[in-house]
Amino acid sequence: MFPIYLKEPGFHEPEESIYYLVTRDGLFQVKRTPLFRSRIRVPGLSWLEEEQEGADFLLPVIPAKILGETMAFFREVFRKYRAEAAVLLYIREGDGEYEIRIPPQTVAGGHCRYEVGPNPAGLRRVGTIHSHAAIEAFHSELDDVDEQYDDGVHVTIGSLHAKPTVSCSLVVDGRRFDLRPEAILEVMPWQLDPTIRLEDSQEVTAEPPPGDSDPTGRPSAI
Image (tube, rainbow, N blue to C red; front, side, top):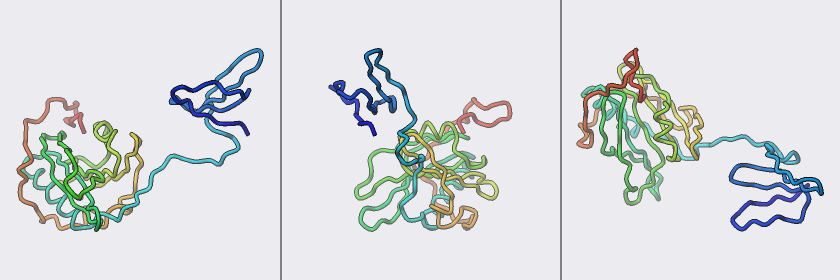
């Protein structure tokens, strides 16, 4: 086996004629002979065991009460504005109970812009839940942008006009890993009483629907 070095600030060439170098740009095999010095990118080290990218959800499932409050808020925003909405998902330090908070947000059709802000005292944010209004649940390109630097669980709930749909994932370092809804939700959204409703949130502001829809009328931001 050959030695492995990290290319940190101040790195100096070691004496070995062959070694592996871990850099910002990946893993390289460096070879030095009287004829040449090469740096060849390699996918891995052949004598090591294989590994695949992945992420596992370690917290308890989100209880029905929390999802019910969330769905009530989403349905009320959809009823009033026909728009998306979002809540922030927290867990209380100490007892590990979940809480949701409705952030200040501006909604219009397939758009929902919200502010995260600092964590409330005693709470740690673990992710988000947002709706897709009448569109089915999936993680859109805009979701990828919004959540690129937001490590945590992200749940999308769609089809609020019919039987709800749901899509769940973990985002870590800009990579999205799909999760089975059963792995993080105690009940599915369509199993909840659709008449449960929260009062209107003072944090929601509506604006005219954006004029960036495609020819089918689907907002491009979804």
